[in-house]
Amino acid sequence: MNAKISFRDIVKTYPMKDGVFTALDHVSLDIADREFVTVVGPSGCGKSTLMSMAAGLTEPTSGEVLVDGAPVAGPGPDRGVIFQQYALFPWLSVRKNVEFGLKLMNLPQDERRKRAEHAIELVGLSDFADALPKTLSGGMKQRCAIARAYAVDPQVLLMDEPFGALDALTRVQLQDQLLDTWSREQRTVMFITHDVDEAVYLARRVIVMAARPGRVQQIVEVDLPYPRTEEMRLSPEFARIRNEVWHGVYHQPKAA
Ligand SMILES: Nc1ncnc2c1ncn2[C@@H]1O[C@H](COP(=O)(O)OP(=O)(O)OP(=O)(O)O)[C@@H](O)[C@H]1O
Ligand SMILES: [Mg+2]
Image: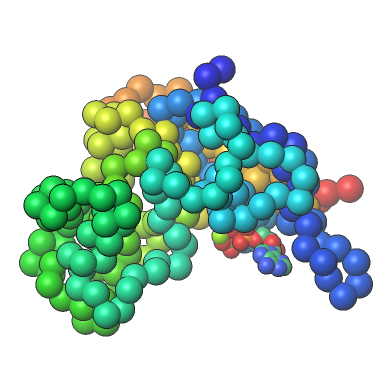
């Protein structure tokens, strides 16, 4: 397999008062170039930790993470990250927040403006482009953070529960938009979610993780063609896959 992101035998431990806590226990996972994978699992199983290693923000205790075959040495514009806790600059408007990532790329001002406009429009915030984050709802702040990652146009999107704070309708709209962009521009996406429906709807493979210690429990293939449609959500095949993932997450055997 032509792996875009390769987690190789990742162990992450944290020192505790009475010994060590193992957050990730020998996790190996390859994500193919242009693949869309979702990651599900109980709270605390290490999903965010694993993703932040691909982002170059956390180092494994042992093992390595490769992107395009090279060890990750830190964050880079090839990988766009949307954090579980959206982090916006409170003193900058929506537009300036979205443009911020582009400044680091040395793009000319009008190109920055154009890309930011497009990304802001994609997430439906055009009417609020000049607003400050404190005047936005939680879901709108989250959409601003999504626009900031989209604007940079990275090859790899690392998304940590990006749609968690959104209402059901906006969520479905952004899912379809993300799939649409992904299929046109063929990114590699690693997407964490608590929502089993969302996990199945988006992905080619769903990675089911288990906790204590954090590990890959099961990988469920989603054998539904793209583009995914609303009708597919109602199909028996979707229900079957959804149940398999659900079972993987909520009926996990206790670790030895
Ligand atoms: N800096 C740290 N020091 C000690 N323990 C940590 C640290 N960061 C994370 N952990 C622990 O590692 C485990 C995995 O955390 P992580 O945030 O990756 O979980 P998660 O699967 O993303 O959970 P959630 O679904 O709640 O977001 C947790 O038990 C957490 O307490
Ligand atoms: Mg998390």
